[in-house]
Length: 346
Image (cartoon, rainbow, N blue to C red; front, side, top):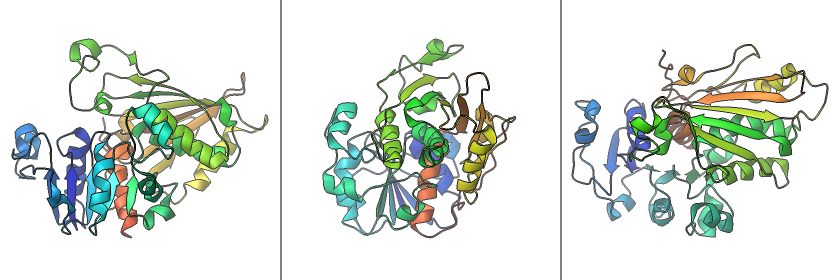
């Protein structure tokens, strides 16, 4: 297949290139950049020397030609809403890694993103690309709204438990931490080495754009409007997300083993979900550079509350890896194609 990556100079774009480079069904990759068109890719990413000798292309109507089978949009909010309709006029399928197509309700999108959303017709066509959860719809989709990193880490353990009424949805608290790549490549005071090294920060408390996305998906499963408490934190590490989730079991006598069995049954055929026992909680290093999501949980006998720990690499399973996993499902490939990577450890 011929692939186009729009927004190739960000962390998500360069991670797409790393993974697509070894994909058995990809023959050529064209890289588009609105800010660095005409420059050599390895000028800013020297680690790609002699691996991908690419020149960045200008984002223009050539993107809408029939030469691409899949277009990945690894772009800021607003770009996908502008370009996806144009791209779909060709035979290409679109996988959007921005937030433009994730929120179904237009007023909710405007509230949280501060701009107009894509039109209702496009939003209706977009399939939410949480691969293990929406596999059948993804297989026939033309356009995918790739989930955010925090929602991926949080929804994968929560959705099966909410769907089977194992936990009280209105009791859910998500306490999540991410590495600095989650903030993108553009430097800021928050990610400045002197500010972050040896430090640990919370940010966007009750204001993070991923919150309505998680509420939307849980509400869909629950069949009723649900609200969450979600607090994100920034860790002084480059990659990784750990979501520590607290909730009340629906049944007083339900054990940790009962909840783990639900997850094990739901994900028994999911190659990238690894459900662990209650005495083996995951750490960020154990999924580093891979498309895995590792999950474990326990119940505090004193309080009766459930504690779930879910870990992913924010750039892979939380972004580019899941996007490629969705591409594989859309084209009938093995889900693991290009993604069968052992985590880097230590």
